[in-house]
Amino acid sequence: MSLKTLVKNSLKSLHLASNDRPTFSPEHFDAHVMTTYGRFPIALTRGRGCYVWDDQGRRYLDFVAGIATCTLGHAHAAMVEAVTQQIQTLHHVSNLYYVPEQGALAHWLVTHSCADRAFFCNSGAEANEGAIKLARKYAHTKRGIANPMIITAQASFHGRTLATITATGQPKYQKNFDPLMPGFAYVPYNDIAALEAMVADLDRETPQVAAIMLEALQGEGGVCPGDRNYFQRIREICNDTGILLIMDEVQVGMGRTGTLWGYENLGIEPDIFTSAKGLGGGIPIGAMLCKAFCDVFEPGDHASTFGGNPFACKVGLTVCQTLEAENLLANVQLRGEQLRFGLQRLVQQYPTLLQQVRGWGLINGLVLQPEAPFTSVDIVKAAMDEGLLLVPAGPQVVRFVPPLIVNADEVQQALIAVEKALAMVVKRQPT
Ligand SMILES: Cc1ncc(COP(=O)(O)O)c(C=O)c1O
Figure 1 (cartoon, rainbow, N blue to C red):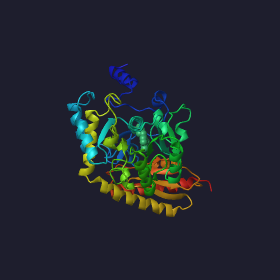
Figure 2: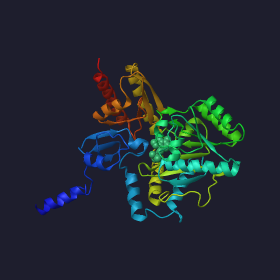
Figure 3: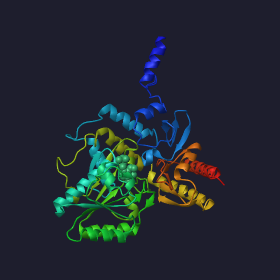
Figure 4: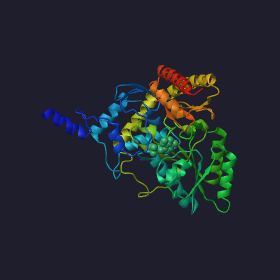
């Protein structure tokens, strides 16, 4: 065996190419990575703007954006610069010390929201854990509640940790992971009578309800926007009782709906809200923000080794500043309208298969008719064949969550691809 072959083979066994990029083999992947995802059969290796490429060099228009995460698309110059500059300067130190980048990001967030304080972590689930802990401590220490309850919505999604799967009102995420956390109760979303009845029931003898925790628009639950009157009445209930309102902004925050925060669409302010996904534009970061009156955390109450490190915070701040500098909220509104208009035409074209289009800004769902002879996954697969990445939100909803920098031409291309994909799926149905 020549020296060259020997080196090549040993690199292969490390699954590294000679340019240090991991080579891809589905067999190795499936042998070593836990099968927690049902994966589509492509491997993405490069991205730029709203496009990604697979390991075969095939280009896709990315209307998934890491599931509503890559706010600025891929390889955005501002992110490349921030990442490069910060990794060369200081990437991690403990929260035992002041981290200026963390302070700067907190300042931006509180001056652009209803909150006064921020706690940083690494993900949406971790941010929601923080919110749950804060609400429980507030209930114990400020309201004398011994067994605090948090009301969440059916069809909600709040993460995959034990507390957040319990908060998530979807049994499919909880199955086989019991015992779940105590202290949660569920109500149908957008149903004020059900919520009032639950509060009355739980608080019948002595106040127990610590918080109501909701998404402004349910993303994973099928792209269901919150109702304005519902949220305004909830705000009144919280004001009257001292119950905290927690909004999970993990999927809809950071400009995705055309306003910076999803709650702005509802004309209310939460007491606590959480952010992640779009906040880092694809670099892991989470944040839990609250109004000053309910910030009951003291040193030692809550912590995160990586949370708020200079690297993630510098990138987060860059994403926030770029949202402003590139006027992306206006882009989200315009491109969202264009997308919904185009999808609406498809609904008119296929009334027996497609039910409606719903969403805000650049989080939209194409909803299938219950009797459609195919699922959202079938459309997602056909769209992939047309060079468009989409993501299901349950079996009946196809979700469109492109980067917020998407332009008119790219939205048009996506509409053409989805129309072709739909025609293909329809053609494949037995007659
Ligand atoms: C509304 C909402 N909350 C929480 C989460 C969990 O976030 P993460 O996956 O970063 O833990 C998600 C993820 O999809 C989400 O959509």
